[in-house]
Image 1 (tube, helix red, strand yellow):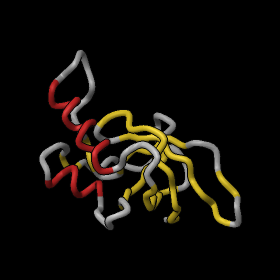
Image 2 (tube, rainbow, N blue to C red):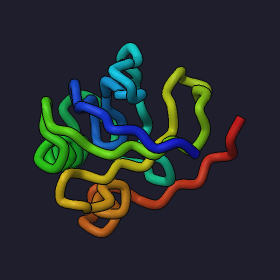
Image 3 (cartoon, rainbow, N blue to C red):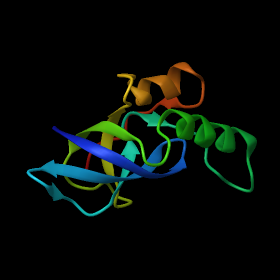
Image 4 (cartoon, rainbow, N blue to C red):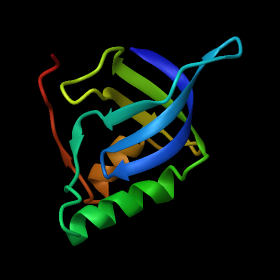
Amino acid sequence: MYEYSARVVSVFDGDSARFDIDLGFYVHMARVTVRLAGINAPELVKGEPAGIEARDFLRDFIPDGSYVTLTTIKDKTEKYGRMLGVIVNDEGINVNDLMVSSGHAVTYMAMPR
């Protein structure tokens, strides 16, 4: 596991977002897409209300331009090209856990590849 300071670029849905990662020493990684590890949120299909609510809830806690702490589960991508990670916002709230406790996602344990 690795821990990074990251700037939120955009939130796609209730369990994935894009970040600029700070590697330290004034070195920045290109933008990466991250799937929030251990959770599964409703999909954004045909305007499904639960998917829209989950996305908007996540956007409220990690708005574009904000900084978060990103802890990656593995520093390689999963089958859809996303890194798996745990997000902690600037108030110290574990966003992955918050998505589940708020009812906007369910616990999901996929097998790492």
